[in-house]
Length: 181
Image (cartoon, rainbow, N blue to C red; front, side, top):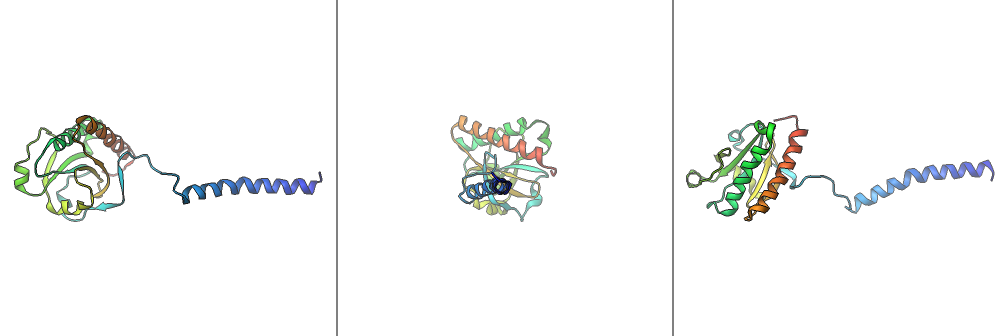
C-alpha cells in the first residue's frame, strides 16, 4: 500500500472519529431521547417569578404549600412531611423556612395543625400568582422568589413520606449548590 493511500485512510479515520460522535449527539438531542436533570420534582420551565407581596416571605429558601379551605388527610400529611423535611435538612435548617399560604385571616384562624416549625402567612396576591401550579402541591421558592420545582401531595401517609424524601433530596442538592440564601 502506498504512502498516499495510508495518508488518505488516516485522514478519513480521523474525520470519521470526530464527525460520528457529533452526529450521534445531534440525533439524540434533536429526537429528545435524552432527559437532562436529576431532580425528583416537576421542574417549571420557565419558573414562576413572584413579584407582589414578596416582602412577607421570609429570607432564604422556602418550602411552600397553599392551604386548602378544610385541612383533611392530604393536608395533614403534607404539613407533617414539611415539618419533617425542615428537621431532616440538618445544618441547613436556618436557610429553609416551611411556609403555608392562606387566602384570608378566617381561613388561617380555622387552620389547626401540629407542625410547630411552619410559618403561616395570609397572602391572597401570592396565591393568585401561584395559580399556574396544580392544586395541592408542595413547591420550592428560591431566595430570588422564583418557584422552580413542585411535588404532588398524597392522602396516603406512606406515599407522602416518599414524596417528602424526594423533596429533601432536591433541597439538599439545591442548598449545596446555591451560594445565595
